[in-house]
Length: 212
Image 1 (tube, one colour):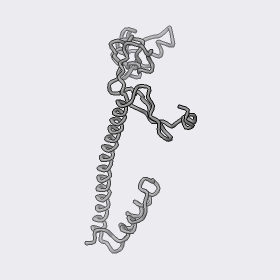
Image 2 (cartoon, helix red, strand yellow):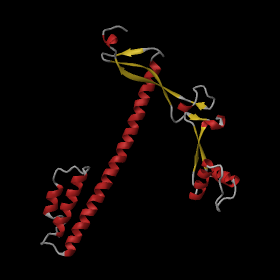
Image 3 (cartoon, helix red, strand yellow):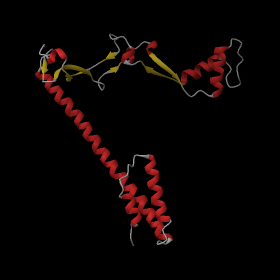
Image 4 (cartoon, one colour):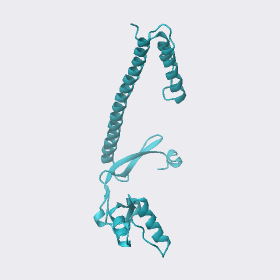
């Protein structure tokens, strides 16, 4: 039995941009219509063709997923190689030294190590946190708003006092520490580590003229 009707071969051999939603719609419509409208196929054969097409796209997806994983590994490897090269060059030059090329230059630069830099929350004051209230019921939320907006507030049946509402809020509140950029530079909670690397930049007009 012929696995792929000639019509489908013709459709799939076209130059198709599979990332284009309009072309996706056109191709899938053409494939299905060419199969189900074929007068040369029995119903079971039409079903077999549809199953073949579904399986083909499943295998194609798996193929590209593999390519994506390989690409991610190579991108990660190139990042590491780039950093290793910059770190080694940094060891070869003095702190203020600049290596001049014909159009660009290399100079020392420190980069914050995001993996090793952090906030020591034990050294943060209470006002250096964001507070987020979660999972309040509609009634609890309504009671809180009413309490804040009106001095003559009558409690609903779900809560009988401000103490109960307070406990509910506290038990459903999460804290998130301020980021480094929100704290004073000399704050004791800031723990920063830096990578000693280099940066490549264009020469200035004066440097191009030899004024270095």
